[in-house]
Amino acid sequence: MRYQSYAYEQNHWERDPDLRHVLAHYWPGFAAHEEELRRFGALAGKEVYEVAYHVDHDAPPVLVMHDLDGNRVDRVRLSPAQEALLRELAPMNRPPYEGGSWHHHYALGYLVADPGIYCILTITNQTAYIIHKYAPEFAEWKDKLLRGEFWGATWMTEIQGGSDLGANTLRATRDGDAWRLDGEKYFCSGAGLTDVAVVTARPEGAPAGPKGLALFLVPRMNRAGELNYHVRRLKDKSATRAVPSGEVDFRGSEAFLVGEAEKGIYYTLEVLTVSRLANAIAGMGIARKAHLEVLERVRRRRSFGRQLVDHPLIRRDLTDMAVRIAGGLMLGFHAADLFEKAWDELPPYTSRYHYARFLSHLAKNRTADHAAEVTRLAMELFGGLGFLEEYAVARWHREALITPIWEGPSNIQALDLLEAMHKKRAHEAFLAEFIPMLEKAGTAEARTAREVIEATLARLAGSKPEEAQWYAKDATARLADAAQVGLLYKLAETAGDRYANLAALYARRFLLGEEYPAWALDKPEVWSA
Image (cartoon, rainbow, N blue to C red; front, side):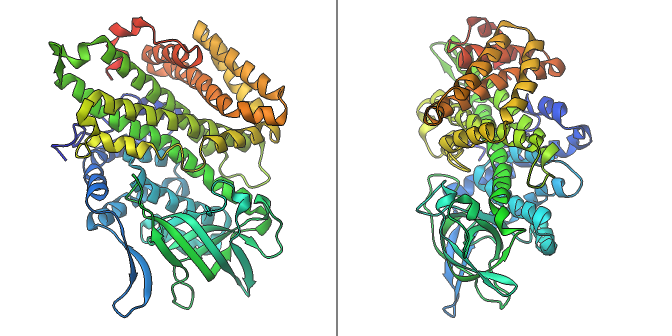
């Protein structure tokens, strides 16, 4: 890797100008874990880089369907390097369940960033989450998941529905103290790796639509010691190759109901919130990896008689990267902080929980845009070398392109945001938090952000339902952009003027639609970090 990546063997905690300030802002226990984060930053810059590159280029998971005696086993073969790394990373899922916080978990996820590796850890975390909150009788499974002895998964997508969970047809039939599942799931991350999966299915007699779905725990092996379902095949993906994704057939598969059947859709949305936050924060981690490559490149490379970094247009592009990464990171951790304060709630939830979910839609949607653009721009700044698969920067763009798709694309985030507004009034808490924040900042850019929030919400409130959907995607981005301006001004109170400058730049570019003002050209503290 040392010949293919500038960021390899660098400590990714020490090289990050924003993460320390963001964690200090949100995580009360941050100081006690700083040394752990430093050690983890070294791991992220070396072993995680090595293994992720190796798996992507040379050793993706392989589905082994039969053993020597002809029996179906449907198990993936992983590179030994990937197996060892996953065991080493498994403890990062423990903090929320062992007296720690979600800030801790997501900080480690940001440093890992690789979406294939982190996906395996996230879907395992989601499985532990469901057992922890709603199926404590399976605590032994949870303990194995948190120790890295078991791997989990969340299987919801079916071919006829995709993001439309209400179209799911997987059937569940009661069988004594368990249930039997019949049907298929079409996009199953962790297929062939997972030991217990969280699966949506429709119990016999349940109504159509999402409220008729229940949630089940489905072990790989049933209580008779037999293979409980079949993996039809693995998907050939453009990236995220470290996580095996496949198609699964259920034929009388043994399953165990989670909680109350009629509350299955609520449990499902909870685990989606966990992964949407992971998607948001890891997306910014991917962007940071590409940014680290670029920062070194522009200092080493010369063109037209001087270093790249001395050219105004290069500084403009570095400014764009810095603005997007800082804003997105603040939005992601702000949403995670609200989730940390509400995740112990049970349905029916309070307004606090609904607001946390509202923020998760804003964060998941906009950080995905940032990740895709930062990594695209990184490739461009490398020129032709940025398009060569042998170097690190090209892979980061491929990896970033999953972040707008996983856990619901932008259209789904926009529709879910509308639902949180119209049914739960979650935008009222958003107004109550961000209007005073922007008023306190008091700048012209902060006033613009306030006006954007008020005008965007007013347009949605005054629109007919079909029109509100038409505007919803733009509104989701606009609200997220205004929130990032406020959050960067808030961070500046403790982390310094760099973040006030970034807030002003963000507002000019994304709220007013202007080019970044040229005063940033001679402020290396803005674009060189």
